[in-house]
Image 1 (spheres, rainbow, N blue to C red):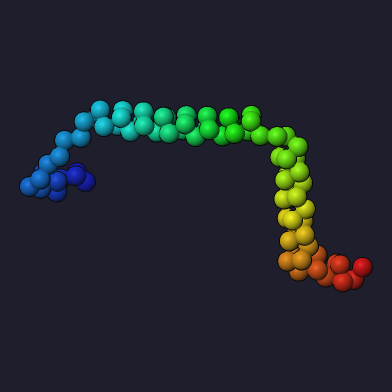
Image 2 (cartoon, helix red, strand yellow):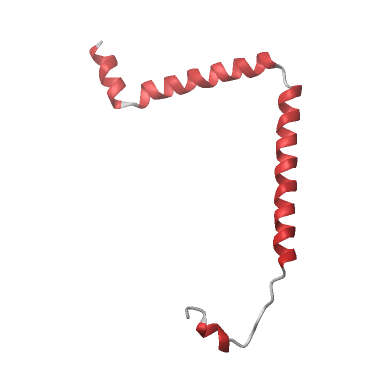
Length: 79
């Protein structure tokens, strides 16, 4: 009933199921390439550099939180 108005539409397009299969395969290939690239990059990287960067990122986030949060700023001012 909702698609009743399409019956008189002058242009009709047939969508093949092959289109959906192709889109699915393309999505899987892109995902596989992305995961493979990230896995190889993580395997080749030096773990010490990764840990050092994680510590630095956590420290920067902590400093940002302390300086931006009003509640923390008030608590720091009281202490």
